[in-house]
Image (cartoon, rainbow, N blue to C red; front, side, top):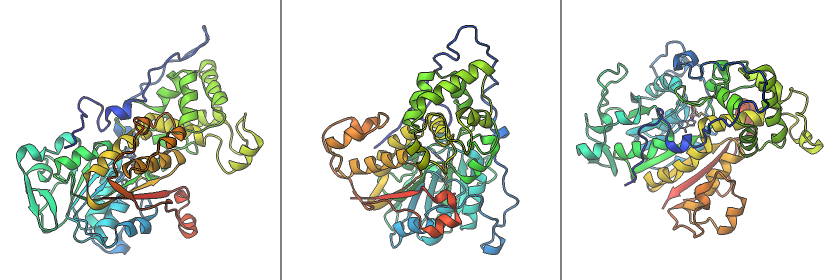
Length: 450
Ligand SMILES: C[S@@+](CC[C@H](N)C(=O)[O-])C[C@H]1O[C@@H](n2cnc3c(N)ncnc32)[C@H](O)[C@@H]1O
């Protein structure tokens, strides 16, 4: 039985996720250069909360439903992955506004238990309302510890359809007494949806606590950022909206973009720009960030950082002609913002560490679907799936980036535990991209447990 240790770490983040949080190695290398004090870094979550939508109707009347705060990408394709399958339980590791999860609930009446994680507590109320409209009894759990280990309590009971769920009022179905949102789910009447404030890295342990290890009916990760996060200037994710350099998916996370930009050494900045941004001009951008903070004081806002990197419409210095053409439509700060965001949230390390445990949790024949939005994520998923399918050849390792550490670990092929369903990733059609341009870089990969 898989058991992950997540004790004693910042809420919802495991040690792997924090492995990239490096201490600063010299804020300003030139002696005598001016420095201003940094602002306090850990602003309370309340100050960066995304506004919740206006009162939501709980009726199923589509006309009464509010406009979705986030449009789920590749929705038809995701539903197609699970079409015809019997899914008594489902894990959504990146719940967001709950669009995918609600659609899965609506198309699978046999679904009794939905377990969902999201690092962003600001999205939980929005998702809870969406899941209620899909007919679920929703409970919210502030951390992994609030899911009582069912194994110890002996709260497992097997129900028809091969689903093992915790017995009423035990384990995952126990209501936190002080949660006003929590109506104790009544198995047999409505599916129960459990929203956990945690990384999907904690998914395998949460599923084990729910009595679903090895019997999970299906799972989904829809990586990256939600529209709510991108659109909220105060979250600091977007170079197009002026806001503080934050970029934490979990507002309680310890590391912010401001810290990275103002305290990490030029070498460390260069490394993340190169590895997580695949930025060709990493040397020059890292140097300019350090020069700017030494000359003018700490960089505090997204526009300050964007203007140090380069100006829209003008390619960032150091770009070659070919690269200029290829990236014409992109803001020059795109790769820098991606790199810093990945470092703040330890995204690639989390993904790489979580996938084997999530695959372990699947029942035979059950599928795990993952939607990625850039090549680094897609490569991590492709490699993890190949590895689980026993297809990772030693030769593949040469092309692996440094952060894909576990894929390098041993030379031998692993015994196959899945089959790869999508030899080539599914991508959105023109109509979807026209409707929702944010879907343009999405790729969906799927494995099925043997
Ligand atoms: C693209 S959105 C998901 C949207 C969702 N599928 C929907 O239909 O509304 C990605 C979400 O994943 C969350 N997220 C990203 N990395 C995470 C992680 N390691 N663990 C949990 N949630 C994560 C983000 O906070 C964000 O809300």
